Image: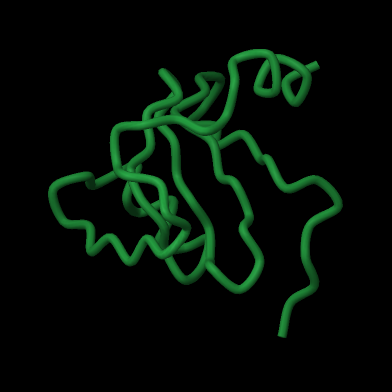
Length: 84
């Protein structure tokens, strides 16, 4: 069992470019957001979450967090703080 990260919001980088964000939701899994902060869905682990960013057509969303895909509960201000 892995421990929870010290910050629930993590940037996902591909080279020197940000491609999205992971929001750790505890027992509900990991919610994925595009770099435009649009929700892709929730996934049971980081590996599947990152796979959703890299292969969006092959994802199996298991979102139980109550947020519909396409809506962002994360503000841009929160993401900017994480990037500094």
